[in-house]
Length: 69
Image (cartoon, rainbow, N blue to C red; front, side, top):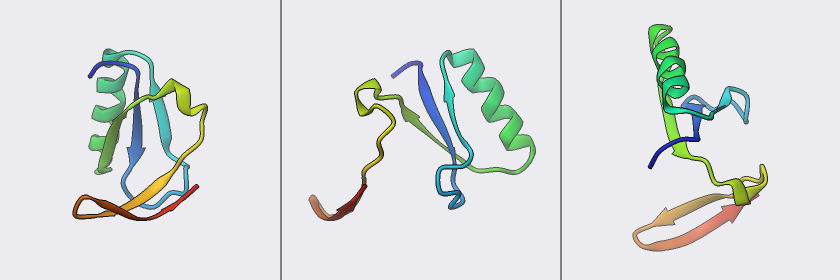
């Protein structure tokens, strides 16, 4: 995938520390800055259709066993 991407801090921040990077160069700069402060990050493709909503799913094997908004 390419930009835009969502960059999240791995530690449980309850949505704080979520950054939308519109371009790959911006994403690279953000990731470099966060890594320089010893932060671990998760990078995800931005899905515009989600309209800012988040669904969390617990998957065991190939089955979703729990989900929440």
